[in-house]
Image 1 (cartoon, rainbow over the protein chains, first blue to last red):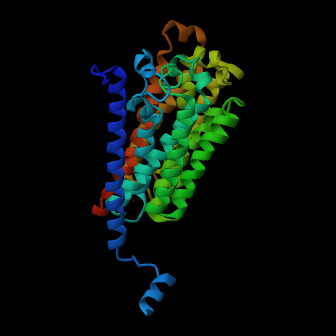
Image 2 (spheres, rainbow over the protein chains, first blue to last red):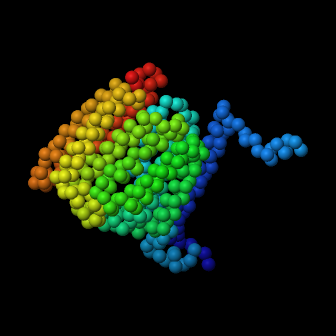
Image 3 (tube, each protein chain N blue to C red):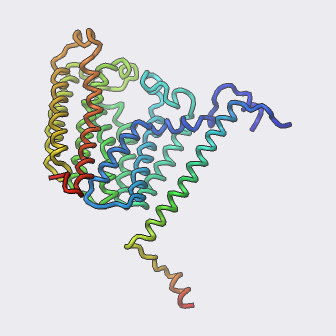
Amino acid sequence: MSLRKEHELHHRRKGRNLGVGVLLASFVVLILALTMVKVTSSGFKFPNSSADSQQTEG
Amino acid sequence: MTDASINASTAQSGDAEFGDYFALLKPRVMSLVVFTALVGLLAAPVSVHPVIGFCAILFIAIGGGASGALNMWWDADIDKVMVRTRKRPIPAGKVDGGEALSLGLALSGLSVIMLALATNIMAGAWLAFTIFFYVVVYTMWLKRLTPQNIVIGGAAGAFPPVIGWVAATGSMTIEPWLMFALTFMWTPPHFWALALFMRSDYDDAGVPMLTVTHGRPSTRKHILVYTILLALLAVGTGFSSIGGALYLATALVLNALFLQGAWKIWRRDEVACEADNFKVERSFFKLSLLYLFLHFGAILFEAVLKPYGLGGW
């Protein structure tokens, strides 16, 4: 049986879930922007890992 | 979801609103953290990419908010007693203490790691130390132990400009410590003035405020002494590389007013205070809010105007 009438509790949870969702989405955008800035900065170098060199040799 | 939870008429653990969790982060304190950290970051003699600068301020603010949540978790018992703090989410029954602890710990870890990644390790380490100092040294250890609690708490609140500066430069010089000292020396007279006209609050909670342990005349003397030292420091900062003509003029005017207020507080007795409902103490407290904002605002102006040949010496 479905619950038709929305309780005040549902409003509270909906608001909270929405807030967490917006925060997470904003965090993803922020990390993307930060990564772009770091990667495109003049001093940036890709790390030379052993896996990279093995792939290059192979 | 169960029917039992739907039938509940009052808020249960885990059913707080989003705003209740935000309130755990002490937004008003966070605004001071954001402002002073921003001044520290912009006063530094290097240029910071706007996105990195934004991230630095954001994560410093989140770190400050996390320590606020941990403070509320630990102090829930005394917050329940004091009128000023009675409506905070935990004593009001909106948020469970365990939730505040989890939120505080999670945001502490997140903010420290993200600040270190976005700027540098040293800035992350300073933020971690600030959270530790505020939560463990101040809140858990010394707040309920010594009447100098406000002085110690003031140190924790004074770190943000230092972290902002380190986030920008990756190194340490004397200038961020001058900003640290400004907030550090400002905090005692600011809070002791509050304690003078909110005395029953601290008495009821059993927090060893100076007004309770050493008496009110002694508190008035402490306010005057700290204000004199603060004035020397604030005016002296005007001659450093973060100062300038505008800052010096601001400092001279504000410190003259602040010293005048502290002098009046020292000269007053309880009868006069009761008669005018602590008028002088209240106006001194209001002035103290403006005092810190304008000092840091002047440092910010000097820093912003410097590239145009206007700010600084």
